[in-house]
Length: 128
Image (cartoon, rainbow, N blue to C red; front, top):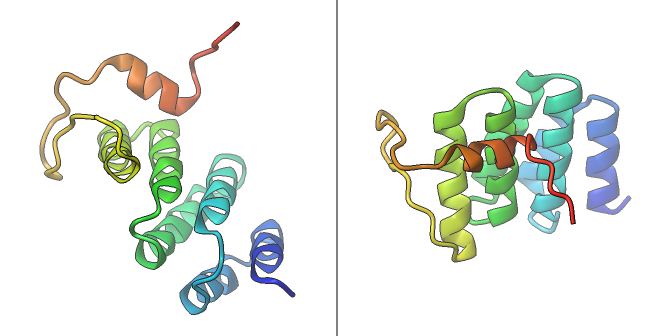
């Protein structure tokens, strides 16, 4: 089986430990797609499993902007605003987007508009 369909099947069936092993073994998996799946798992089933998946994804693909965006969205959704901002800052840096936020773990976010967090959470309804 190709790595991405296998990864998705493992996530859908809740076999997160097997998925983490697969992510550590295969570098040809589109990590952004798996990160989106981890976000879905965290928001619909088990946030703890999502945390585990995101930890492995950070190790396997530390320079993948899509992974960091999914982490930022997850952290914002569970109310961890400081972690969401740090992950969003990493995503922005990797994607070449200007975004200012403290880099230290203990630093309080300053001058970050609430809209940034609301957008990451998905609270903002944009109509055209």
